[in-house]
Amino acid sequence: MHYTKFTKSDFLLKLDSITSYSMKVEEVKDAVSGYGYDQARLKEGREMWERLRVLYYEARDKSVQKSKCHAEKKRMQNDIHKKYMKYLKLARVAFVNDIEAQEALVLTGVRARTYDKWFTQVSVFVNNLKSNEQYLRSIGEYGVKISDLDELKKGLLDITELSDKCVRITAVVRMLNDKVRKETIEVQHWVSSYLKVARIALEGSPEMMNLLGQSDKN
Image (cartoon, rainbow, N blue to C red):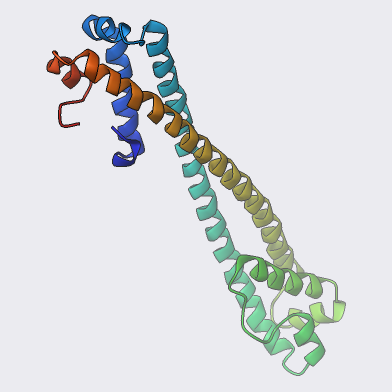
């Protein structure tokens, strides 16, 4: 039995069955005890399964949180970008003849595609608009109020906080997945050795090997 042949959840179910039956079924316990697998050693395998189970579900829960965090970040970015593009188009009208303003507000050229560059473009636009009274008066003639820019600025602050949270969760998921991988390999070594011995100990009892989820073909 090798973990690469199963999903993580199925591998855990297999381990659960093997370790629990090995500790509960007297015929199995008696047979393997004569080959070095006493109650303490069987308990060791059971505890390894338990640690892996806890780690697996913790990693899975954090992965769900990670997905939700990134989905919310994407939604928030889309909302901010929609408002930004509206104000950007109005700014291009307001400053059609003002080269200096066009450069200061990054009104020309393509819009950034990566998150970091996009964030920089929007930040430069908002900050340079808010810090220049003349720019505010000019764009104000096209219906863009300071409160609109404040709302856009707040959106940038909120998405920064959310982005930091996503980074932290991603790091936790990576750490937990690494632990799951290492623990899985450790458990695999234990169960592989145990099943080899159990097959020898239960050679005359194929029904007991079937009880452990194994057969002569395994």
